[in-house]
Length: 548
Image 1 (tube, rainbow, N blue to C red):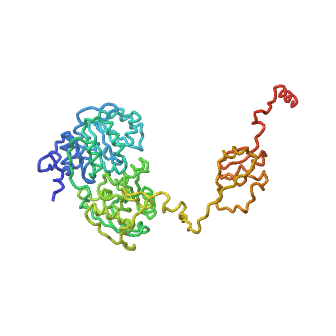
Image 2: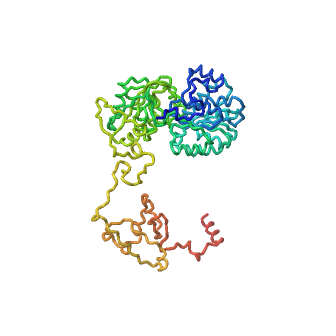
């Protein structure tokens, strides 16, 4: 069987380097690494750093928590050490899918490049654009950005991308899931054709490889471990309970486990807030993190969790990747992830850097297909556990949750609108009438005999009676109704019939049509007639004098 290091196909010697000194890094970076406490590179760092220093494009694949960020930040600092940035023209660009990941990359440049005079700018949403523009105007060597804010800056004319020498696309598969690929393709089209591109992803699916073929030129593929494997240092378990028992199950697991700190993942943002309030109500020290929060609140929440001021953080998948929080003891999947790959990234928040961790998943019987997809991806079944006081159930492999639950799996067809979905307000959809109960269509409205010429009547569109099924014999015929009462049935406006009284008020026999247009019927007022005599100036003067 091929070992993970053999899959890397490195151009270096057969024996992998064991220290950072063997990778060709300068003394300034080595001093910064030593002060940070790093002496031994990870497999992805050992294989990627020499290739990046050679100037080749790299297609890197490694699971979360293996040190991908340092594998491109360290050689980039060495490459950019020689040169000077121009105003609004960054020399390198790093694209990240989330603000937190972009901020973490910026922190790595501060840590490893402390002995280099390199300028960086962090361009993300939720921050002051004027401050970011001021940084760009002074010139930056490293630009770290999310795709949306970067395009906004470019469209405003605040940045030029024709001097970028190194491009890094980090967590490409996450960008694909979040729908950022069209923005990334547009950004790449704005860059110079001659550049070095570093493409990193946790998985290498067909779509990711298509993008790599479009962005990279003769890349060196480095895969240090399969993207479908989980860390061996993480102990996994799953409890299958009813939906109503999930919160009690989570509280019980938190109490019985020795939780130092833990991520609690939910699939939807609104569920994050609901679970956060529930745990807060039961006396747990907890914070929440999701994409709808303001950037200042997100940064404050993450800082509290990193410093250990709170033990629990309820979050969405925005925290599933890139967040470097050391010594996380537990991960709880309050919801089974919809996409199997997200399970690997979630539980990868614990068991990092050789430490042990524990990951618990709380499933319902309806999550059967999602669990099967996860177990098929990781190649092992997840052990089942029972929680005291909560009935244990079995997974239902035939169940399929709709949009009201977890959502359909990727690629599944969405239910048609107006199908079996209940109407608003909890009312059930109206059942179709039995064949014997179907109401026969109403007869056609008889033509009313008037003095109007036949050709005028022929031009009028016939209107179908709206009150289908109404007993017509109970109402008097139109010929028997007085003129002032005609049109009250059809003249009633659907929005309240507020114009009914205008018929009697004007007294000129007009009709109020169903479409809200007022007509004069069979009587034309005198002032419309062409032969109506207009008053002369003399008569108008006499009338005014008589009024005086």
